Length: 121
Length: 234
Image 1 (tube, chains in turn brown, purple):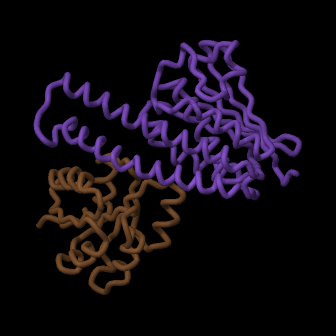
Image 2 (spheres, rainbow over the protein chains, first blue to last red):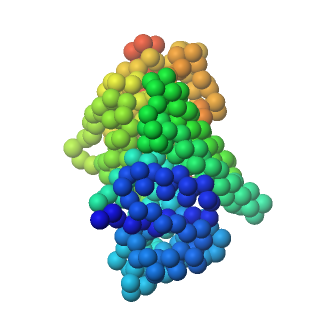
Image 3 (cartoon, one colour):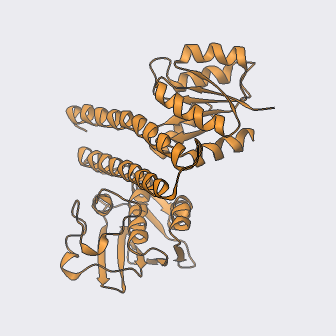
C-alpha cells in the first residue's frame, strides 16, 4: 500500500512541484495551503508523514508542528519542516517544536526523498 | 546592533527566505524534466537543463554568501566565544563537507598533534570561516588531496589548509580576501560562490583576535593559515 504524505505550504507552486515529485516516487500526496486547513486534513486523512513549510501566515509551520505533536492521533507521525533558515537555526528550531527533521530550501529532490525514506520507507 | 541595522538585518533575512521559495519552484521544475521524471529527454536537453540546475545552485550560494557578509557588516560586535576542542571542530566541519569532497573527488588528510588543541572562538562563526577556506581549496584543486594541519604556538593555535591546485598569481595574494576578487585561473566554478567566501572568513577570524595568511605558488598549490588565540583575549 502506498504511503500517504501531507504537504503543507501556502505557495501553490511549491505544492505543485513537490506533489509531482512525490507522486512520481510512489507516494500518495495530499496538500493543504494553510495551517488550519492542514490540521483538519491531517486529522481526517491521518497521513504517514507531514511536510510543513515554516514560513506561512499564522499559524506558522512551527505552531502547526507543535499542534500535530500534541495530537493523540497524529503525534507519532513524522513531521518534516521545510525552511529557508540556516542549518544551525533550522536544527535548533526543529528540535524546539518537536519536528522529526528539516529540509532546507531550495531543496533538491534526492535530499527530500532520502529524508522521507529514512522516516517512512 | 544599532536598532536601524537590526531592522535592516531582519528585512534582509526575511527577504532571503522569501527568495528561496521561487528558487525552490524553479529548481524542482527543472529537475523534474532533467531527471526524466516527466518523460524522456535527449542528451542535449539534459545538458542544458543540468546547466540551469547548476546555476540555480550557484545563485543560492551567492545569496547565502551575500547574506552572511551583510550580517557580519551589520553586527560589528565580537561574538560570544568559548574554549573549543580543535579536534571536535574539525570533525564537525569535515562531516558537513564530506558530501562536497565526494562530489568533487577530493580527499583530505588531517594532521593534528597528539594532544588536543583548544581555541577560544565563537564556534558558529569559526566553523563558517573554516568551511569557506576548505571549500575554496576544493574549488581550486578538484580531484586532489587537501591537507589540514594544526599546530600549537605560543598562546596561538595555527591551522593550515593546503591544496595542490593551480595556485594564486603573486600579484593577487594581497587581493584574495577582498570582495569579489577573481583571477584568470579561477574559471573553475564548483561551489560557485559570490567571491565573498575568503572575505567572510578573513573578517570572522580577525574579529576573533586571529589572522588569516596566504602563501601560494602557481601550479603547485596554496596554503591558507589561520592563527587564533588559545585563550580569552582582550
